[in-house]
Amino acid sequence: MTQQVLVRHRSRTRASSAPAVRRVRARKGHAAAVLVAPYVLLLLVGGLIPTGYAVVKSLQNEAETGFGGLSSYQRVAGDFRFVETFANVALVLCVWMPLLLTAAVVLALLVDASPRRFGASMRFVYYLPGAFAGIANFMLWLFLLNPGQSPVDFLWHGFGYTSLNEVAQPGNLPFIIAAMLFFQGTGTWVVVLCGGLNGIPDELLEAAKMDGATAWGVVWSVKIPMIRPWLGYMTLLNLAYGFQLFLEPQVLGQVTHGLISPQWTPNQLSFTYAYQILDTPAAAAMSVILLLVTLGLGLLVVHRSRLFQDER
Image (cartoon, rainbow, N blue to C red; front, side, top):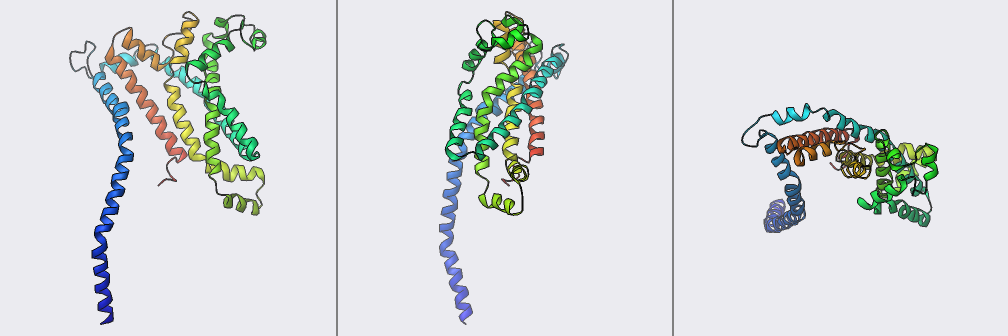
């Protein structure tokens, strides 16, 4: 009898609390929708709609009067500059990415191991070059690269260079652009990695030390594996940025009076198709190819770095 009373009481309690639970879930759902809505809007305006437009445009014929199938892709792939543009970007990435990853990890570990006030000061110092973003950073580099004005002109004279055109010759361009990207972005990623290192629980570090791990062992076996998602995130974003190179080679080509090819990167080749050759379907095809290459590399990085594993 007592058990039947308890069961009836629990049923009445569940029935009376069900509307309240539904109201709480509804409020959480509405709050989530409000938070996600701006992102979805930006994704549509800045990502999905332009991508869909580029795909549709790339399937038009050269005169843009009807369906052209894959003819625009054939024109782009048959361009003698097509492979060269990707090779140029790949060379920049081969120089830039290992330097960036190594320097950012080493500097972040040093900052993390430094006393609190000194570490905070060094984070600010490392971040400063990133504050000179875009054209301001580029103008600074123009002075650095010009032997007649550069504070490191002894370096250029050591290589036998006496003018900006000799420094910025095409063979040196991958290294110059890699240096620009390195000094502009490394400090920002040091700050990001320091955030990841600060998130490692102290109990985990203490347990490693109690197990006899040396300082190097703690770094190699605990800290670096724990910031692996941040390293994957850094690699992903910088790969995407590298394939979008446009400003640096474009302006360097102008200040060196055409010494650098105006189709040095895939983005520049796409720009040439759109605004000089006036072949918009080919420009759209170039953009879609660039998107597929970047997306494929991005998925590979996400898979290898297990970027989202900890969030599931």
